[in-house]
Amino acid sequence: MNSIAKIMIIGEDEALLTIKQLHLLKEGFEVIELDSIYKIENDLPNINLIIINSGYQGMDGLDILEYIRQKDFSIPIIFLGNNDSQQEIEKAFSIGADDYLSKPFGIVELVCRIKAILKRSYGIKKERLTNRDITLDLNQRVCYVNEEEVDLTKLEFDLLNFFIEHKNRILEREYILSEVWGDEAETKKRTVNVRMNRLIKKIDPNNTKAYFTAIRGIGYRFD
Image (cartoon, rainbow, N blue to C red; front, side):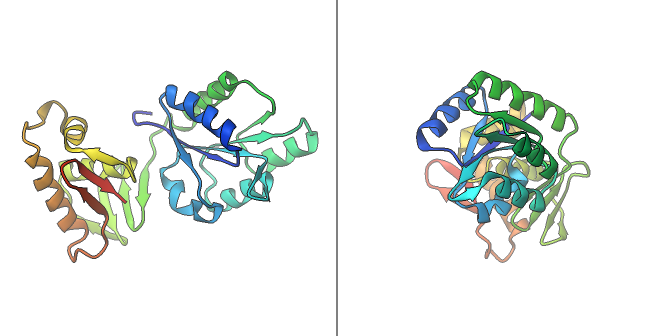
């Protein structure tokens, strides 16, 4: 994978969650926390792997696994069980878990399993990237807004792709220049403003959807 892998952890006490976050961040992953299981559908298109603990907000981990599989069968999932129950292991795999780990386990083992699954799952590039009513066909390099094709330049497509991959993060203009423009980046930060305005006019001509938030003196955030 060329971009930062986003990992969602579901159902963990705060202390253990912090430990896992620190280790995963150190390994170069981005860790996403889930506010509500019923909001997960909005996050799934931009998550690369999910870790499910056996319990979350009074729900059984297997029920959570089954709920997610009803929404998306392709996303890799590691299930963390509380015991070596053969019945639980078999049920987890039958519902759709890609891997199963019994507690207690070492964080190094978890990281190794994450890397192995990501390598297998994303050897072939993701074909589509979706957020709200925007869909990017990464193979054909076509943008759709509310299922209608929008004509974007190569740079505009790359810019929108970059923001969707970094959803809800404030991105500084210098960082956007270096990551999207690369070696061809112009030195003036105003370049980003001009290109952003053109992109926004194309995907939101009526200026009603508020895809982007401009952060004064810093950059932009894609919401």
